[in-house]
Amino acid sequence: MDPADDFWTALRRTTQARIGLGRTGDALPTTDVLTLRTAHAAARDAVHVPLDVEIFTAQIASMGLGTPVTVTSRAADRSEYLRRPDLGRLPADLSGLGRHDADIGIVLADGLSARALTDHAAGLLAVLADEFADRYTLAPPVVATQARVALGDHIGAALGVRTVLVLIGERPGLSVADSLGIYLTHDPRPGRTDAERNCVSNIHPPGGLTYADAARVIAGLVAGARALGHSGVALKDETRTATPIARADSDTLE
Image (cartoon, rainbow, N blue to C red; front, side, top):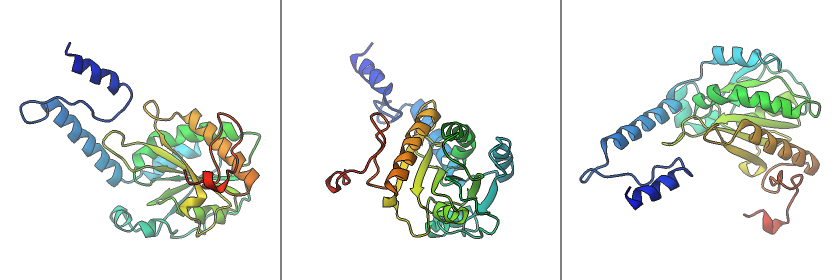
């Protein structure tokens, strides 16, 4: 075996990035070109294909966590959603949401990859529910379409929850098209900034973060946010050592 091939083979085990690709004359090998085009097509589909709300909502309803409510942003369709991120942050109508005053509200948002939601949301939600059992009360799940993260602030405020978790499809790339992220905002209300949130991303087993690991980190952050009275840059994931705590100002600029 060529030593260079052995070198790249070892490195490929540590990343999903395309590294050490071969050459055929002045071009990439046909196999690599076709693999790249396939990944690009999958990423485009993830962005443009809408969530099948009826099937997804039925799946979530069958989990026994309450009857899910469906809401949408002010973006009229997928095209407008992609062109107008601002509309994706604003609700069209939240009158169907009841006030629950629960500890945690969970929003299942399509984001930039509805596929991530259909592939991973139910599994992750089940693990989160087990993680929170006997500790926190949960409002019924909310399914949000044409949604950006900040839509969760409006939903959380309408539900009256203390903390909102937005499970959202992340921007797809050429390595992963179905990655899910969780955004945590304590005391949600319209006008919250990204600096007031915490994020756990790259959730897509088996290649990414597992549901159990994501739930463990989020549980630690929820506990930390409740202790501090806020989420965001001052709240750190210290689940490997202790409960998340606030750092000095000099440490929040990492």
